[in-house]
Image (cartoon, rainbow, N blue to C red; front, side, top):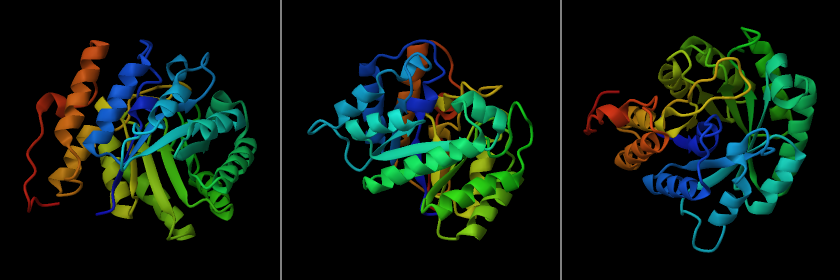
Amino acid sequence: MNDIYIHEVGPRDGLQMEKQTVPSEQKIAWIQRLAEAGVDIIQVGSFVHPEKVPQMADTDRLFQHFNLPGRKPPNVELSGLVLNEKGLERGLACGVDMFCMGVSASETHSRKNTGMSIDEATDRIISMAKAVLNEGKRVQTSVQSAFGCGFEGPVPPRRVLSIVRRYLESGIRNISLADTAGHAIPDQVTSLFQGIFKLDPSVECACHFHNTYAMGMANCRAAMQLGVKYFESSFAGLGGCPFTRVAAGNVCTEDFVHFLQRKGLRTDIDLTKLIEISKDVAIFFGREMPGLVYKTGPIPWREGTPS
């Protein structure tokens, strides 16, 4: 459990559902402060058509800003979500460090999200992922709706593992399971990640849980126990997929970091700075955020705290 990496997706997944446009300058300030807090990866935005997700219209500009000399935060990777070849071209042109892309394990969600079947989307994503690797860039592929679908209900685990197997056969080593609908429970998390590690014990696994039914933190704990290293979360608990039936926020970054630090893990991350960001986000949107620790305040970490 010592190798835990925080992939902050707030600037992308956290903001994409917000109707109030966030100015680029405000996003830049939040991203800079997230980097200063010590998170490992920050998902700056997604390369989608601005008419479909207007909040992401400035993604190219944000990457261009941070890739100017002296502006890129040290010791942090900047990731971007791509859905198609056009988005990939844009990402390569503006200096994305790590490309994130995925396939839904739900036929209904896949067609609503991409207009393609699962098989068609898998072929396309694998081709794109190989192109990224050929460019010497990092890539993370995901299986979305891995634990259930708001439209279809349960998703067969064999379908999820079939997509994962195709990723592995294509040489992709960083694989995420995304709980797009928030249906996961810890037993499912344990079972699916066990299935992945059985296919290949050396794979680098990531997880992305939504807190739709208040199971996000419990699912993170289950993933940690299985050896999952990368955890995607959002400041203030913002977020949700606009193409699922019931959209709800992500696991809250400061809440998850607070949990880790109670266990004596990732004490290098500045929790106070994360809390300040979430307070600022609440003021900006003029409402209370889903996160809890920014409201209650943290319990100070002490060495020797039982795990």
